[in-house]
Image 1 (cartoon, rainbow, N blue to C red):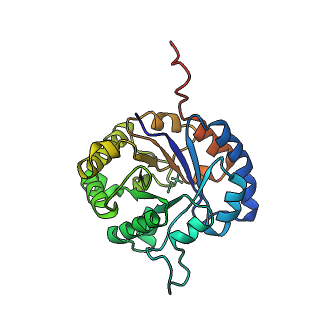
Image 2: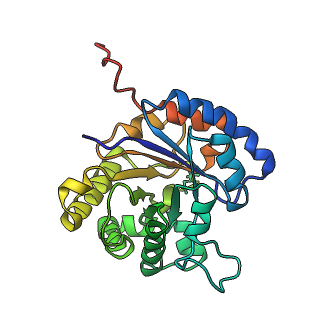
Image 3: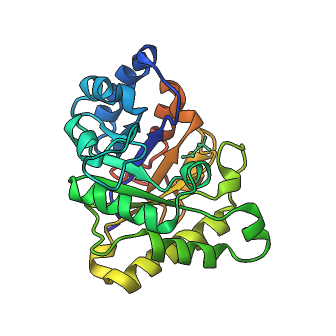
Length: 258
Ligand code: PGA
């Protein structure tokens, strides 16, 4: 059985107390769409607790990063345990912006994913190739190496989600072709399966991210092994984010004869 779809919003370094107004309609939509998908918002840590208060049990909240250690002398960092303490259930690790801005290596990302699991959170491990790597025909090799280096041992559907985000598609308005997305997601599934065995891996969700919007969401979500989306820009407004959630097919509806 295909994993239950997950539509995740990544607010990045955007959002203040004023932005919380977007969350009430998202909570209502998530409740209505519960039969179709899980909904997650990853706001900045500063408003994570307030976001959880508004979303309640309708949608999950998650962090955008965590430190590998549970506590200690790391000024400015946030531990996975602290995110869990505020009600987070997920945390994004290894987003390409952190890999670039903070020089995060695969080993660092893996340690953060392990920390997430230790704290009872699901890590959303991001992988993706640069435009140069794709043009050089190295996209799949890059993904293989990132997965091998960033995904910890003992991956299960409860502690791991993988997000495929080609770097050149993030915030650019450009998305990968359906064929490229299908190829990357199939590769990710098969690498996980080789390492952890097909039974456990079947339930692990693989999200596509990079300029997902209300117009392209249905097409992307229909691709094999695409179990949801990681949405940046279009998650900041309830209207566009809800439209993306609504693009998840309702499998209870009979397919149209047309
Ligand atoms: P985008 O960001 O939807 O704005 O391209 C996606 C992401 O970086 O997670």
